[in-house]
Amino acid sequence: MTDAHVGLAGQLSRLPQRQVLSDDVYETVKGLIMDSVVEPGTRLNIDALTRELGISQTPIRESLARLESDGLVIKEPLRGYRVSSRLTRAEFEDLFEFRLHIEPWAAARAAERSGAEDLARLKAEMLSYTDVPDRPSYESYRAMAAHDQRFHDLVLELAGNETARLSFQRTHCHLHLFRLYYGGGIATKALREHKAVVTAVRKGDPEEAAAAMRSHIEASRARLRPIFDQD
Image (cartoon, rainbow, N blue to C red; front, side, top):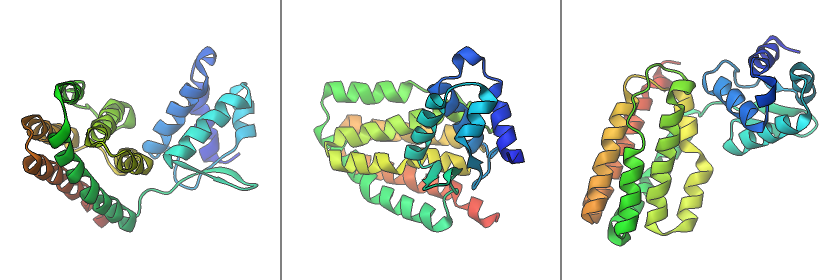
């Protein structure tokens, strides 16, 4: 077993055994990947993890399958699972180009077609997360990442185009963007930008809603681009 694998198993073995179920393994491994404790390319051996944790293979297989769906691990024939690479600069730019095509349009559509119940849901989601993460770790940012995903997914839902929504969901974009970096007040800025989107949608102003969403996505891209200049 490699040093990285020993470290992973050691982290998992600290969980109370009665809680070492699929969700616990999933969240623990995801946190280690997000925080780069387990680096890209690290192999995750099911048999070794089963022995180390003293549990059946079922929760481990289930958690790895979920991580594969997230794009955080890759299953290779006859070789098992390994941790995926982080977004490359080209993938990062492609992702934001896709978002700039889809999400401003979705915000405009949401402004045009949302009823009172829809607008109440959007406001409730905006208000559901107001904390500011206190340290640059996935544990601290996990709730923010979940809110970010829910917020953007809801705007796509209110736009009424399920194909566009499913296409967006499959990118798992917020998970992969937070994997690149969290810190530097990005949560506070993103929440402020979300509020501008909600305000425009609730006003029923498609042009303002599209502009607010475009501004948010462009600002997010600008906050993260310098990461690639550090390599």
